[in-house]
Each structure stands twice: as C-alpha cells, then as structure tokens.
Length: 341
Image (cartoon, one colour):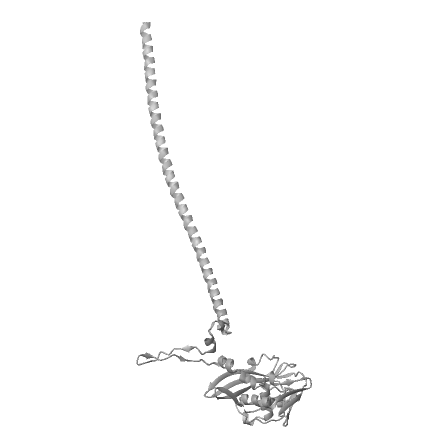
C-alpha cells in the first residue's frame, strides 16, 4: 500500500515537471514571437518616421531655397536698376560736357588745316557722258572764316584819338563815304597801319616821312585819290606837315590815360559780290563809372554796372555799324561806313 502511493506522487511530480516544461517552452515561444513582432513593428515605425522626417526636411529646405532665391533675385534686380541709372547719368553728363566742349570749338584742334579754314576739296559726283568731273574746291565761308582771314581790316580802320575829344567820335556820328571823310581822319587811319620801322622816335619828336605815310594810305584805301597832306592827330600826338621836307612831325608827349574808351566788336562778316561787309556793335565805355554810352548821347549812360567785356550782352542797346570794303585785284579797301543804329 505505501509503495503504490509513492508511485502516484512521483507520477504527479513528473506530470508537474512536464507541464512546467511545456509551459516554459510555450512561454518562451510566445515571448520570442512577441519580441520578433515588436522588433519588426519598431523597425517599420522607425523607417516610416525616417521617411516622414526626410520629406518634411526636404520640403522645408525647398521652401528656404525658394525664399533665398527670391531675396537674391530681388537684390540683383535692384542692383541692376541702380547700375542702369548710374550708367544713364554718366552718359548724360558725358554728352552734356561733350556738347559744351563742341560749343566752344574745343575739338577744332582735331580738324585738318583745310577743315579749320573751310577750303577742303569736295568731290562733285556730277557725271557727264559717264565721265566724272574734276574735283572742285569748295570753301565754306562763315563768320569765323571771315574774321580769321579779314578781321584785320577792322583793326586798320579804328581811330586812335583821345576819347575825351569830340573829334574821336567823328566817324561814328553818321554815314561816311571815304571820299567824304576828312583828310585828317584818313591820315590817322593810315598812320595806325604803319610799321614801327616807318616811325622815327627820339626824346623830343616823332617823325614820319611823307612817302611812308603815302604808301600806307594807298595800301589802306587802294588809291591816292583822297590823299591830302595835312596836319592830323593820333591819340594825344598832334602831327604837323612840313611841305618843304614832306614830313610829318609831332612833339613826343606822354599821353594821359582817359577814363573813356571806344569799344567795338564784330557781330557778323559776309561777302556779296565784290563787297565785304563787317557789322559791328560800338560804344563808349567809361571805366570810372562802369557805364556804356552811345554816340547819340554823350551825357547820360545807356547801360550801367558793366565792364568792357559786356558789349555783346548789351549789343541791342548800343550803336551798330556796317563797314563796306570793295574788292580790287584780290584785295579789299575801305569804301564806306554806314550807321545802322
């Protein structure tokens, strides 16, 4: 009886061991299965999370890149606009100063001599029977060209008389033909064109031989028709004519400076036929008063607060004259002076 009970206990023990072993084995398999499942789910979740984060990062980076591109492009456009404005201003300034230089004839030094003188050869393409004509010399004659070539004529016809003397204004009072001008005035103009070699000077006298003054007279007026030897004045010098010696003599006086000065500027020069015309503006300038007087009124100034360089700016209020020089054998000789205003 006791032997039978032991066997039963052993059997129960064995059963318990087997059950435990099976239970452990099952639990182990379950744990293993759960662990594998968790790992797989974790890996999948990590991969999904990585992909999602990567997409978010890429999207954010793309947005930032676009914003930066817009900022850079906007800045670049602004820079380009500023650059274009600066370039436009520089070009405008260059054109303005270029025009200013052109207006004052700064670029004339770049022209050839014939261009400056207006006598370059210009080909004419007029064809006759299929043959070209020879080149014809064309001269473009404008005011500047005439002043350059014949401006000296006016200098020769300017009186050198004491500006405080009424006789100094003789030529400016009315129209004058050379044949109507006083001999003393004509001799004054002839003396003004003499070379220094023709004038003999010492501490006492100044003398000019009659033949010298006669030659100067003929060179200025083209003939001796109106030549009459007589006394004449030049500035403050009073020349007396000696018929015996055929000589003009004046005391060597030192001329005092006058406040009055006759100013005359060329307004225009042109040629018609065999006559050369010089248009001038003239006035009497009083240095102490800084005023311009006209020859029609020597007592009241016409313009005040000026300098002797302001003749052109006030030309409309001053006197105006026309000098006529007639051409004879390629030379021009004074024929008349017309008072225009």
